[in-house]
Length: 88
Image (cartoon, rainbow, N blue to C red; front, side, top):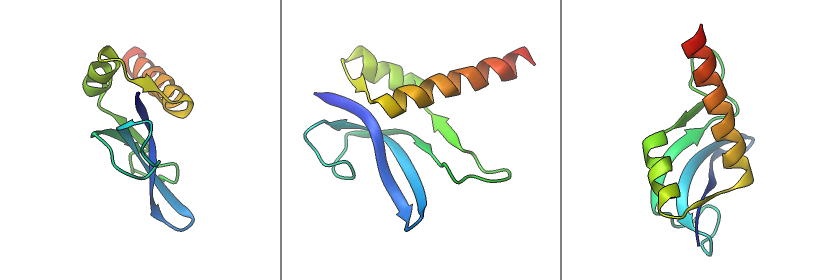
């Protein structure tokens, strides 16, 4: 099964996560098909905390890819912030 999940990168105690499309049998930080975004939980100041390429995400979902729980939560969070910025 194809899954969209987070792959950890960054240094010790400085995590950085790539949002990747991967086969569920592969290791968390292993081989992946495509990078569709990133999440930086330690972002400060003007740094971007979350970026998702929604067109590619919807493409993979149409092909049957499943979202992990964490990615699902981040997508909902991203959509809320986009709606808030549009309404402001």
